[in-house]
Image (tube, rainbow, N blue to C red; front, top):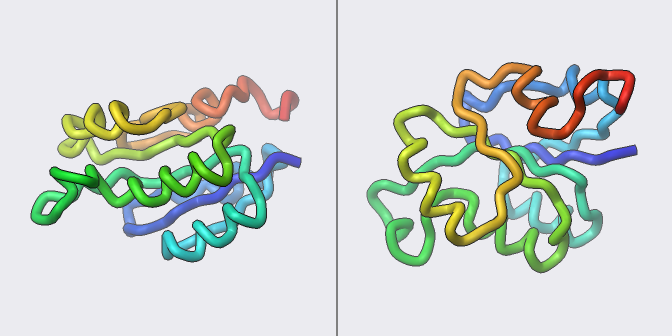
Length: 130
């Protein structure tokens, strides 16, 4: 069974739990990156889904671009084969390229994200293939 970690840091993050279950994917939901990092050290997920939140008034413009930097570094170390899918609000899409320069991202999906967008990004063309 495939596994997916959802990092939910805002109310905008869509709830695709029913879709993951329908696709035969075991989802673990995290509201704190620290807890996700500990879980990654124990189990390498097939997918990580998280929301890109650009850091406007902090150090993100320097060493870090967004909320996902530390998480993506942890994945590089403990789970380098995890496919990372990020959701991005349209106004922040202009900043995603900065993240793409630093980390391998499997897919970037702009809000509103549909179930079809997500399954396509995951490489699942229909439920029968899951």
